[in-house]
Length: 248
Image (cartoon, rainbow, N blue to C red; front, side, top):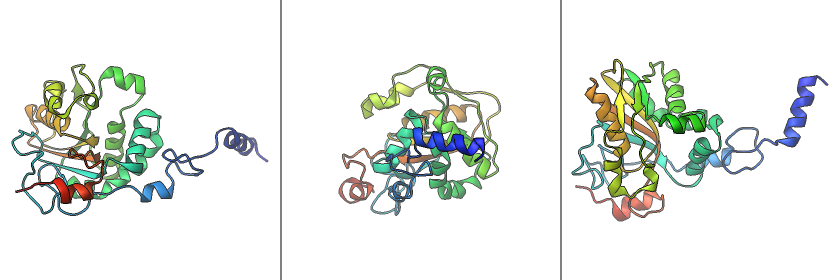
């Protein structure tokens, strides 16, 4: 038995291969059961923010009246269950091996947008947070999607203000919290696809899009792995469609 094979066997005994989401035995970072249970958003959505709706609409009650700087936002699935756990593992448990799986989850939607953009960008972290984590999960997703679709990666978007974390604030305070928090540097492409992990109120995506437009971008599309329901539906976007998406 070769030394490499012997060491591999020892490592597998000490650190058994498991799914990074459910921790069941798995040779892959994401087991088939968890991948199959991702709650994908299908059916009609709000044309502006991508919220699931009863029928296609120009804007829904969540984005109506807001001055959202992005052109259109879309998300792969609902931020619940195994998809939520996968994103949590990616961000907080050094689950970088999940990038390939999560980027593939939104690859079809990305493919629909890639022909309409010149480059891919991502929502930046503060220097302190990125240094502590060791990476920016949105940056890793953007890099993988840009590589897969042969698009340049724009890295000039920066977080220039230290602000309280958005998830610790109520929905009403999030827009004010991120005002002026981002700035774009260098030459900004005219048409940009902005990548992030989770869409909640759209405040962060909108502020980033505004920063890109201030430097010359004309169109900014947003694509996230998941979106958080704002209607108390506990992540069940199908029930949210029926019960609480009041569209015009």
